[in-house]
Image (cartoon, rainbow, N blue to C red; front, side):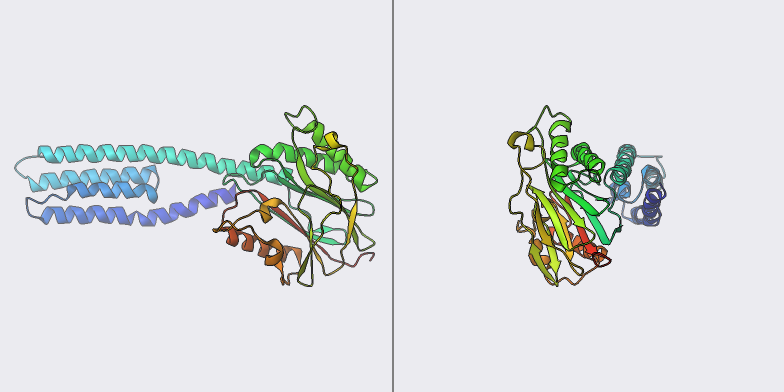
Length: 368
């Protein structure tokens, strides 16, 4: 884990330099206390040195500073009362300072143990994301693609939003979805649907057959589900043929795609959306296939409701169409980079729900 090790080394190097602050404080208090009038005692101020050290160092640094403070307090007592080794007052101050130092060292040990556990959680969640939800390939036949996943939970890199792409003999099939719930508990549900999509996307002849298969997989396959209706996933499934400029779509209760054309966002609402996947066993829907125009120069944007339901400080929703109007980024990667920065700036750096987005554009004209 070289990246994780490097992240740990950087604050350690900075912490060593900052140790000069508590050490300098101990020296300053020691010198002032030695030369102060006999009725003025500054020894209790030494406790500030070990108290601030946990913010800049680990258990060893805290133990070193605490020991130095105890030595300084002992030296002050001896030098101020040369006829008596230590007064009762100085002995009490030394014992109190030592106890504070021990407590701070124990605190730092527990804090570092917790930090290592959180680092391991981050590492494992990143590994899970690479396996369950890897970034989309940059090229999908004649298409260019870029993907973005932002998890709402601080220690999770993956949650309930999902996306995937599969090449067929005649085009590209895409899915984007959102599992009911969020966080790490939704990973297994997302993995189930993604596995079903990859298994069937190349073999189901029509888009409605593919969606029916996915609905059946979700209805009976989600952990803890005894049948249809126990869990559901909103999703949009698309088929983008290589040789003409129409996209075919089945929407299952998911936010509609947006086509950004000449800086103008066009929302592609479904004429007859189906229920979310997992509820089809109750309603037995007939899946209506919508289509819309998608040509070179356009960007196709697929997203989850974590994007459009993100809120700013005034609790106003993120206005996707309004925010992207006029954006000139024709490259999916450039668009995703700008979109990430804009969304996080809008919400103040923290999302309340997982958010995912896919940007698709043409690398070559259809049919070439």
